[in-house]
Image (cartoon, rainbow, N blue to C red):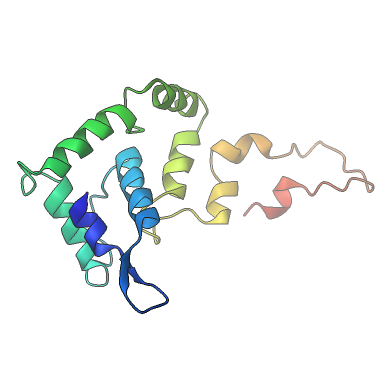
Amino acid sequence: HDVIRSVMLYDNEDGQEVEDDTLYNTLYRFLVLFGVPQRRFLSRKHGKVWRAIDATLLPPKANGCPDMAVFIRDQERFSLSEGSDGRIANARRRLEGMDGAMDLLLSLVSFDPKKRATPLDVINSRFMSVLIEDDAVIDCEDDIVKSYTAYQT
């Protein structure tokens, strides 16, 4: 935790570097819930963050690091893919029970912005396919609800 926290600094109004606990906590929870991305995108631009993640959370470099032990324990409880916490397990079951829901969620929270789902990806996803209107439906001119299919590509 300490190494990752140390790389997340911002300048306060006095020009001093201050730790950003909100950003740190958000990143840590994201990594616990969704896992550490396998691919290191923008590693030159964000190298400090990647080095901190690699050094503290991933084996074999982090062997013996107390942060890795805490991270593994937190993932065992709160990882979306296999966490044992009842709320997480229930959410996983519900997501897996809806066609395309898990895939859509994971594409929306992709760590790599180039792989993240766009609005068009969302409306064209399997999960949203149940909202596509049947061609046989007659439109009413007074209907203020826009057709989902008007945005489909």
